[in-house]
Image (cartoon, rainbow, N blue to C red; front, top):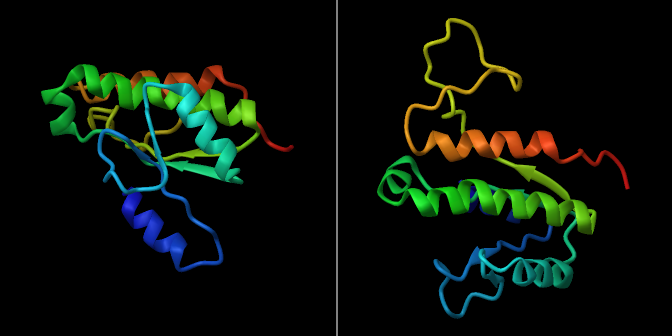
Amino acid sequence: MGRSLVNVFNKSRWEVYPLVPNSIADPSYPNKFDRNDEGSLRALLLDISPDIIINAYELSREESEENPEEATEINTNFVDQLARLSQELKIWLLHISTDQIFDGNRSSSYTSSSEPSPLNIFEGPKEKEKSLFGEIPPMLAY
């Protein structure tokens, strides 16, 4: 999803700075950070000085099943780090996630207040991710 967002925004009037973790970035890529080092991400954000961060970084269901520790690191801990940094640096954060914290057995639509019902390891960290945003006060204006 991240690449698709970059392609869409590159066609607009916006300057786009895709950020890629060192673990998956090409060595020549300019906007790399260490997702396990908050200082690395903070320095990059201070250097770029974005108006908004759009986060679509997550492991797929299959990748999460194969590596549950990394799933928790990316789908929960990294999201927490981004939320704290965006608040500290007064940068808007749009976090795009999946609806896969629900089992799909409900007869009506899910809402932001629906009780999560994770089916597997992928949804477990996603459920924790959802609860993180309830703990961090939203920033509506600067």
